[in-house]
Image 1: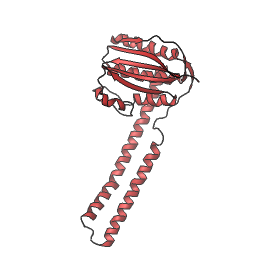
Image 2 (image 1 turned 120 degrees about the vertical axis):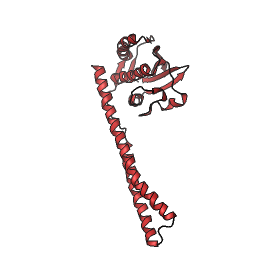
Image 3 (image 1 turned 120 degrees about the horizontal axis):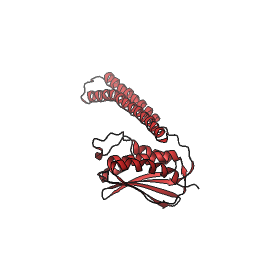
Image 4 (image 1 turned 45 degrees about the horizontal axis):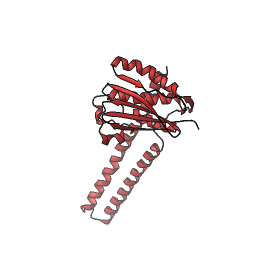
Length: 239
């Protein structure tokens, strides 16, 4: 039931993103018309087509009016983007790490055994974390699905470390072919790496992870080394 609810949540979030993208494309189209008019008037003025002062003044007024039109479109765009285009419900509280890891282990142990992928969760000391356990499961599921989709199917592992008042959870998979220069973009919305190939996807999975972790006062980052992709989730402990 939890997995179904998370899937429904992802579908709603994807629909919000599609609506936002449609809005941006519409505004982009709206800008093209006044911009073309400005370029037309400016070219006519530079070529001396308007020979009288009245015509020149009229062309200048038209350019000013079209510029005002573009300014209005930009204001609308800024207002729309002042908030995030996805709404996330995060019910923060306190929970044990083992609650979340139990969900991940139960599901992916079965799933990866079918594909023959070696799956290992490092032994860890249980601790209390701060945030929304269901949302943290969603974050880890997104990362795991990426590891399944873009790895080579040989090995996926989960490890843990401590940093100040945080517990770090790192998901690593073998077979990473993402170029180093693309790594800074993997958390951008609608971005898909050159290693995506024919794999289907929206380019929103890791973006959603970043948003959710920010709402839980946590963090997420990634690095690569020797053909291994590592995505690390930083979870806060209660104060």
